[in-house]
Image (cartoon, one colour):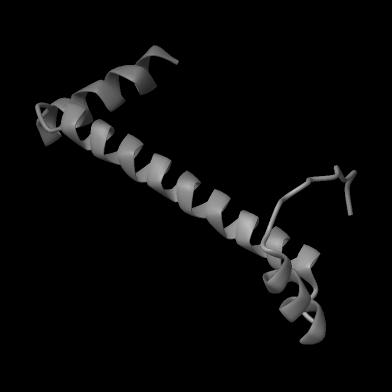
Length: 76
């Protein structure tokens, strides 16, 4: 495990007490929720980038793509 930092989060006392009574590891729950939120945001970002790329490439024909690839290969 890499280095860690301390996060301070305020939650309702009742919520914390219920979690403790049920034996819920709050740190694990928060860490897992944060990982899931980050992954979702990264997926959204990649989807937006793919949509933008698709829009940019929609004006280029398949023949043009083939021609550009051949030119690139020939230039090597």
